[in-house]
Amino acid sequence: MALGLMLALAACSPIESRTRDGLIRAGLSPKLATCMAKPMSEQLSVAQLRKLAKLGTSAGESGEGHGRKHLLKRIRSLDDPQIVSVTATAAALCSVGLN
Image (cartoon, rainbow, N blue to C red; front, side):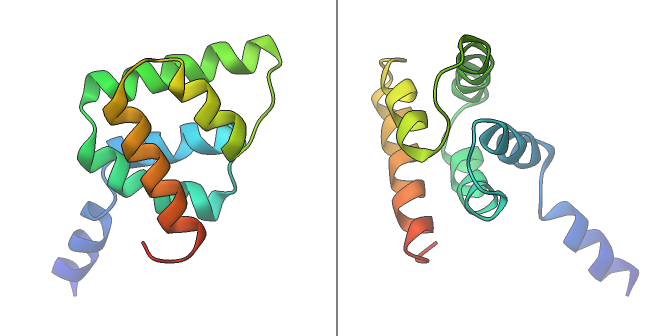
């Protein structure tokens, strides 16, 4: 039983948790953010995730809109095709329940 609990706790890494929390702060629903966080934290580097975190902070301070549409628009401004691809794919798959 203790092993099962340990495995369940290990399933959500700190990076995945931080990614999820950042997506929620960016205006995504907790359900969508939770779904998107796993593939994003697995497919993006720590440096790319840091870029995303900084983008969320500056966007929130500037009063820009929130939500999936605005998030993807801000992400495109990073000029990193992999971040755009991974985020857009995760958003699409999670939105239709395929992830």
